[in-house]
Length: 165
Image (cartoon, rainbow, N blue to C red):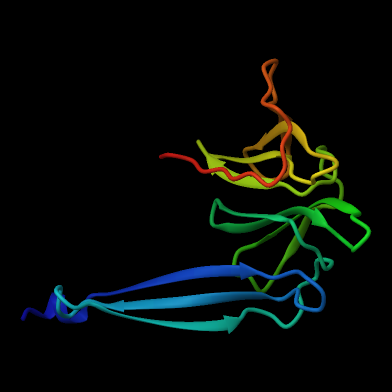
C-alpha cells in the first residue's frame, strides 16, 4: 500500500442553523474520511456547537445558503404570531456573524434560498396564507434585484428548489 493511499484524508463540514425557541445556536458536523483502503473507506462524524448564542434573533423558516465562502442567513419568522423578517446575516465560520442589513428590499418572508450562476436566489414566500411568487437575486448578499419577470409561477407554499451545475 503506498503512502499516498494511507495518508489520504478528506474533511467535510455540514452546518445546522437551529433558530427555534431557545435553540438558536449554529452547530456543525465534521466528517472525516480515511481512505487507506479504497474498498473499505471509514468515515467518522462529530457534531459541535459553533457558538452558544448567535447574535441574530430567534427565528424559523429562514433560508440558509453557502455563497462566496460564507454562510448566509435570510429572513424567517420571528415569533408564534407569524411576524416575518427580511434581515440578512453572514458568517465565514458559523461562530462570528455580521448583520449585512436589517431591512432587505424583499418583503419579510419564509423564503427558499439557493445559489445558482454566482448569485444568491430567494424564491417566493412559503407561508400558507401569504405565499408569493417573487424572485430576487444578489451577486454580493447586500444588493438585490427583483428578477420575477413578466411570466410568473403560481404562488405556492412549502415547495423545494435545486440547481443543476
